[in-house]
Length: 346
Ligand SMILES: [Zn+2]
Ligand SMILES: [Zn+2]
Image (cartoon, rainbow, N blue to C red; front, side, top):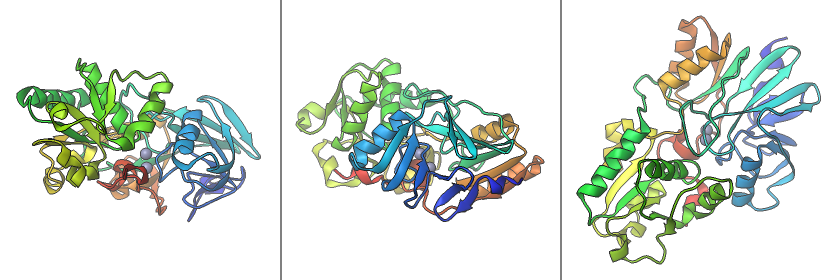
């Protein structure tokens, strides 16, 4: 049996006919297995949805109670039988609740990793490497130029700037699910204990993380604070608002942006970012290649991002490899460069 007989790339996403489900479908389907809550992977309108409890909760926060016909929460390590396939979720280390989906059918083991990173993140369970025959990987930062470095060193740059310019507000552009919460946790880990301010678009998701036991210290909304109060503070906001009217409530702000794309100077300049912070929730080049090798997979399928370089790397390392060309990923988070998710407008 070929791997394509178990998971077939279709216009709606990866389809498992034997199990009667799709993984991260981009169009409405009867049964969806969802890796994580970013809106390009987790869409509303499916019949049944299987995901971790956190992913289901995040979908509910975004889309409302009736985002799916029915839901089933699956724990990490739990195996669910879906007709001719066995499905197990493993932590992906990307955002809270993110999972890799291991599919076993007819003795063949395929892991669809969704989005992932193999570095520590205090706001989600650590990435777990799963041995498999076929590994399906993203390639958001799939070029050797992308090496993210130490996130705590980036936070040190931010705090140094705050100390250097005590009158200026620091505005940190960050995506609302995952990046925002990780940046707050990193700032706290660096010992900063003053209140941290939030744009309203990040409030619900951040409060949800707190209900799952993650402590952010004092987090307050910008709404209601005046210019004088915001002087010298740190505020997290959706990247697009850095250039909007909204940011005028801050006096002489230092604009920062936390993203893996900040490795590219031209990107930072183009978006008028004064202080780029290279912090990503995706694996960098070394992370992608090390993970592929560690899975022991003999075949690699590459989804969204910089597929070509990763396919080339795999082939030169004796693996079979192909790009998947599924349209529809990359509308949220860093996958698409610098756009915002749909819930970042308020
Ligand atoms: Zn994602
Ligand atoms: Zn993605």
